Image 1 (cartoon, rainbow, N blue to C red):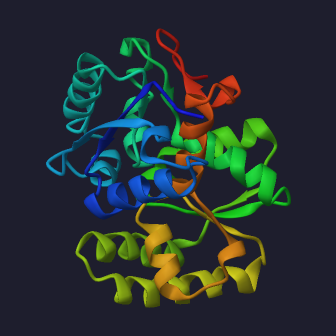
Image 2 (cartoon, one colour):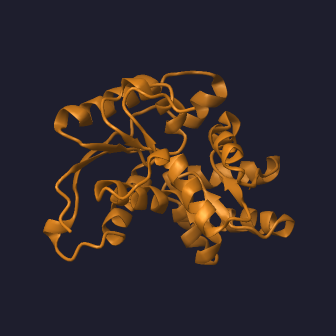
Image 3 (cartoon, rainbow, N blue to C red):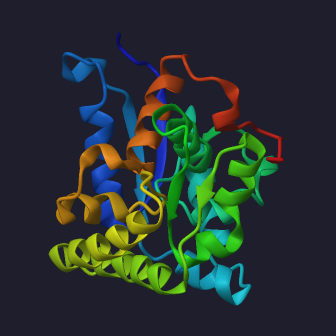
Length: 245
């Protein structure tokens, strides 16, 4: 089925994760020709200040460029918005009432996929800023979804994994993430929610079992495709003029 609507993507947070999101958007599409894929309007803006550092310091400096990027995509003709960065949604949740278009929320998309694939619960693997914000924990609690939060040492390794992927040190990131993940599995053998968009890249490099990870990048790609085909239920969307609960 040809998709006639435009997906507006605010990326660059980080560039490798954005590139992987676009790959998954194509790979997961049922399209059989170029013409059946969605049109993508992309802003890849790596200059947006570090989201996790801002959350931990109580700063709002990523907010203005995130808002500006999303509104630029609206002006360019986007029909639907997506941001392949989990921690950015801490700031997006502040401006939901300013967006004139629906935005596919990566956290809701990821939890939706986790409930489907791993109803018994999962480990939250995310930046320290995302964990500290409670972004996933609050939504998981509302769903009644068991979400395990790593201890301090494992969390530090997960944060380091994200930094290494951003630095292009993917093999090293895979080693660090593999050690952290195996440590988590010794406590609870449940899938890992790769709730930072660098982490699916590291997970693949780690050579860990593919079916033991829920990728926030893949979940976002699937949710965007479903929404563009008109098949997505409403909880995964920030609708214009509505702040998330």
